[in-house]
Length: 222
Image (cartoon, rainbow, N blue to C red; front, side, top):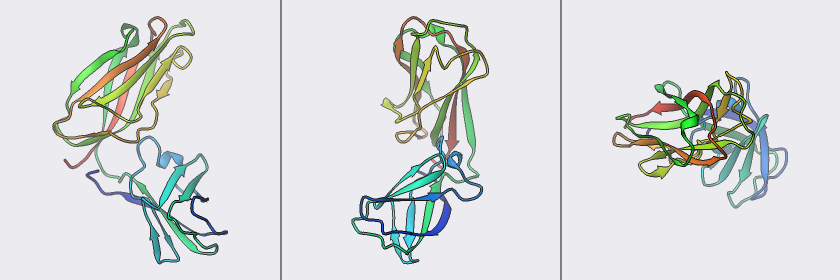
């Protein structure tokens, strides 16, 4: 990505040896939680430092963010000794970048088959798509078998994650929110990029739901 990462740093001590392929967990520090890293806020370049000397980076570890703690997997090929001091540095998207919300007021009833919803949306600058949500304004009671799947596309390549599955069950009443799946890759826009919003699958008759499709975009250096 075109911007630098910032880090949440968690110090600790390995209680037991951690063999290659094994894991250890750390708790979120004060002021941080899963919400500090989900919805596109996680950065790249996580690393750990053992005994203030041995650094294991992106290729050596895997990081999984849970509801209450963080799991680190040792992929380094060596065993980390029990009793070692450890400093876990978790990358976040840095603060201070401009965030833009792309909003599209829509009536889903008109989309009854796969196809484009909006095409050739151009920001004219570098950006990263971080999060997609459907904000429900109104949905009447409808048959239980109706569903619509929405995805994003950049220059003909599908964004990894960000899919919205709207159903008769989760689009109820008004004021609700349906979150898209976590966005993990293929989400970078350049000055020349064109963003498209696609209906990729539908089930049953038309899903009637009125609301706003909201896409959170973080502007970057191009």
